[in-house]
Image (cartoon, rainbow, N blue to C red; front, side, top):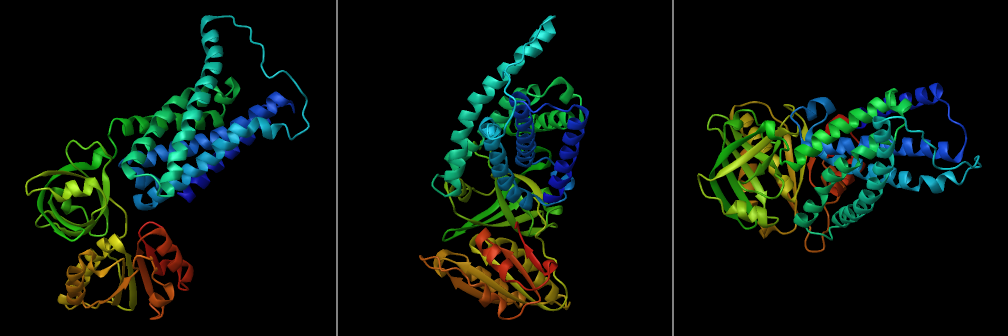
Amino acid sequence: MLRLNLIVFGFALAAYVLQVLCFPFPLTTRDVLHQMFVVTGVAAWILMAEAMVIAARPAWLERIAGEPLDRLMAAHKKIGWAMVAFLALHVAAPCIRDLFPLIQVPMMEEHHITGFWQGVWTYLHPLGGLTAILITIYGATVIYRDALRGMRKIAWPRWEKAHMMWAWIFLGLALHAVRSLKETELFMPLGWITVASTVIGCWAAVRILRGRKGSPIRSGGTVEKAAGDGDVLFLTVRTAKAKEIRAGEFVYLSLPGDREDSHPFTVAGSDPERETLFFWIKEAGEWTKALGRSKPGDTLFIEGPFGTFTPDFPIEGNEAWVAGGAGIAPFIGWLEELKEARKAGKSAPQVTLWWSVRHRAEGGLPFVTALANEAGAKLVVHETGDRHVHLPPEEVLQGNPDRIAVCGKPGLTRSLRAAWKGGARSFRSEAY
């Protein structure tokens, strides 16, 4: 996403410089404030449109962005907070302007209205400004709830309903985003970028509000088996999509009549011949409990596949696979492929699978242990305990692995990446 943003904002910067060269502005309080509003507003608007498109999950998203959706969803959060930063500068622009010695002029320009459409265009400006003020005040409450969610002080269902309001906020700000530009600016490249961001963002916002996220790549399936082991659900789903989905990729699952957004889960196993997908799902709320009560034959919707964290290991060397909690799911598929490679007499790397769990009794350990033995991989279980004593990176790296793959929470991934001394291509992670 960084590469795409460098291109987009590079074009936006070039467009702004061209605009200033073609239409120089005087150093007055009114004109400088307008320029501050334009720069901060356009930057915030582009970022907000990007966040809308990522949330809408169109089928072409990964191809255009050049990155898998798991990384894009991680970028979605960063883009959102960057948008909030530019929005704060946008709101604070009048205070920033007062720090510079400028020629004082009246803040409102006089307009001589000569026709109906000119009148409409003129009065849309204060209307857009007023609605933007009201929507920004409401948006501050949504930002507050996003911050609470980041600190895990608000439950997911409550936060999700509040976060969905960003789509309404984008639609509400569309008039302000377009009408705040001058006529000369609208017909310059920066205006084209603003209008394009508005159209694309509104399209994505409408899809989100209509519950059409990822709909072109969504299809139905049926539950074949749902069995529990402690707080872990082993789910097998029959779907024709199994022919195009690999273990390690992830999909979004939803139940008929869901009021919540679809939930992402890594595919732990795929059998194209039987047209089945296998999921390892850790119980984390009411929705996963409802999923655990599914019976054979029940309908389930699958959207995807996304991601690139699929088995792709060389035939030799020493590898460390690190899973944090439910991050074991993709490595189940990796172990299956490693097992098949050894069964077929093919060369395969020496693998140590590190699994960080709170307690060994949480569920699923016998299954993973048996699979690791069959695949010829060494399994090391690290218990964090109730004090959350995290897996030390030096323990993982003491065996001098040639390559490392990580699937877990951001903190675990960042600590291992910081300690890794090998090449960047020898370090794989699911989303970071």
